[in-house]
Image 1 (cartoon, rainbow, N blue to C red):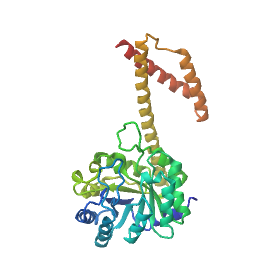
Image 2 (image 1 turned 45 degrees about the vertical axis):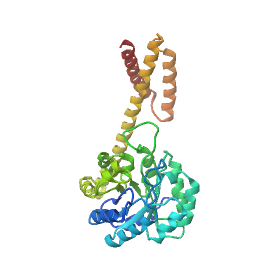
Image 3 (image 1 turned 135 degrees about the horizontal axis):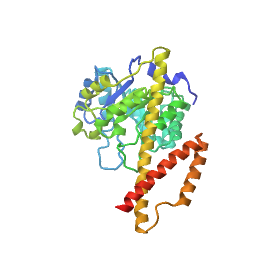
Image 4 (image 1 turned 30 degrees about the vertical axis):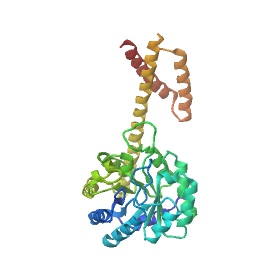
Length: 360
């Protein structure tokens, strides 16, 4: 897939002076519910109404969507409000039904992106249409798999393409429902800057009070749009209640978010500089998180040494670590002096942690 401006034509056609906003309920529950939300979004910055028609759930027994009936509601909402519509498709049959009901944008879910077989089936089904296709990142943090799914649609002749960043599953418990792993979409942007990138803060956050900060980070990183789950009564939504916000809250959020405009060389410079600084901030957060995890293991080692009456300092082990890190540093263009300073500081903090454990 070559990087070219053609990939952005569908987005530019909206003629917006702000990032694209896609909003609507996690699930279409009833016709009344969907139409009410659509009308509340009609006169806001929202351009596209989203709704899950088929809901793949991690575990059976939860609400799995109303099915094809909901497509009629989406079509009616489009007729009454003028909003474009989008829903997730997971197989060729979904595509056929969505096309029949004039759905404007099809999105590929995270669980689907992981399977090249299913992605190819959908790509074949949408071939020959002029539909916009947005591909969510796979559940696992794999940039090649994400881009591979996009390339399958491009190869099928679909040039109205974009990607949705919805975070990645992780075994470890984090403050997010799905860890954002910001560096992965940053790498995608660097490789294909003309491929529109949209944030799904709802699935990353898992709770509504974190959605604003995620959206601001995305705008600071020059994302092209936001897909936000909205419901007039979020607490009583049939699926993902905790991560949905009201249309009114969404409207206020779009007012409060800071959007930088590029006008002239100086502002373009500041825009690029702020983007790179945001990237550094995100990496710094990851460094601190990893250091914290490292020290937790150090505390466990301290307890083990105390139990077995073993000395804190293990010179052989320390020299092995230092030598390995110096070589790693060279491969990453880091000077030996810099690596020594960092790891001596880390080693000293490790000793302090183990002292505290042993002396307690």
